[in-house]
Length: 488
Image 1 (cartoon, one colour):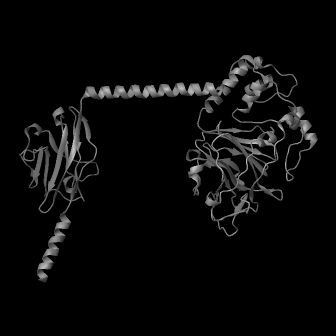
Image 2 (tube, rainbow, N blue to C red; image 1 turned 60 degrees about the vertical axis):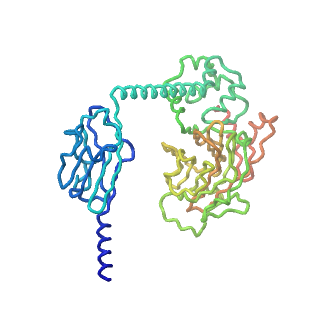
Image 3 (tube, helix red, strand yellow; image 1 turned 90 degrees about the vertical axis):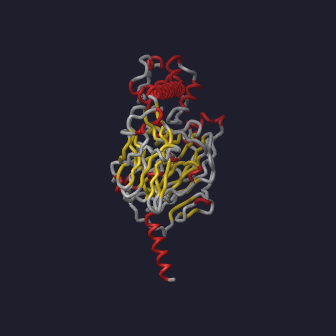
């Protein structure tokens, strides 16, 4: 009885060791009339196929094979139409041929009649398997027509893209063209100025005229003399090479615009779009401490961070989401007048509320737009190319203006009343505010409730008066305001 069990086990092991399967490509093999083609076929797991029977045959032609290999050599039994046209070949350069289980078929001088399925059949003493390879024959004339169709299709798409790009540029700069042709009204100029790429909201005593606005659009620096040229004289020469280059750059998906050094912004105008929100406690990182009112966050003192790079995983998100309109908020970055050296502030897509792990994942293409302050490494954006700000003093309070309709995200130094940077991009869907307090400094990150803006009826007087700031903000000296007004 024991000998019978042993014999059955040995027989089972032998059958298992010699079992195999035939592997062929799933997709049809395409070739042209008159060319040479390889129909791939191999044994898995690889084993020496020299002692096996290998038969290639057409549908219902098992006994009239295309190619037959048995008893270690090719047999004369073969379909006459494939005589002297078929042989064994290698599936790839790394293949070892029959000794490696590669039984691929090489067929020369292809004809239209060769189109259709070919069966690869391999059998041994205890196992066999077969698979079907489909061959598709293309006539040269059909191939030419196919290439013509593809060429005209691609050409049509390129023409549509070019026309669409030209139309987009003309639509985006329709305000500049109007300024140079006829000199628009004061209301139209102010509207175009507000909808410009930098979204700069200037402060000063009184409104600027249409001629002054046209001058600022066509020249890089405003003149300091009292007498300025009218709009027509500035625009007679047409756009310069630099202006043309700027138009092309703004047609890209992501664009950066740095504020001009020393140029002020009207914080009261920005605060007209102020919104109030709290931090989303549902997606808070475990090593972050959040205040009871959900307005302040900082890293946990027990959080051990030994990496040299910025801790991007310490992110928190706003509980409110925005998909249209303009929205402005301010973030306090100083404690006892010591500005934070480590922070990350911006926006991200609402569906990305998963804790980011590293910097490569935080890109505009993945739905993240922000400024990051990384100690001695400075302040930089996450755009490509990276924009680094050369600031002698770090912001103690940062203002953020998100303009969903115009696709702009702007950052401002509230205490210095200056524009820092604007990112122009396509913000599809809804976004939420993004915060990261960083590590290695004691200051926390606090979302502020902005003061209410002044009455619109007294807007003109408010622009020339002291700004509405809370008690923690220092009021600029009156003499500095007068000097700035004289320079302009």
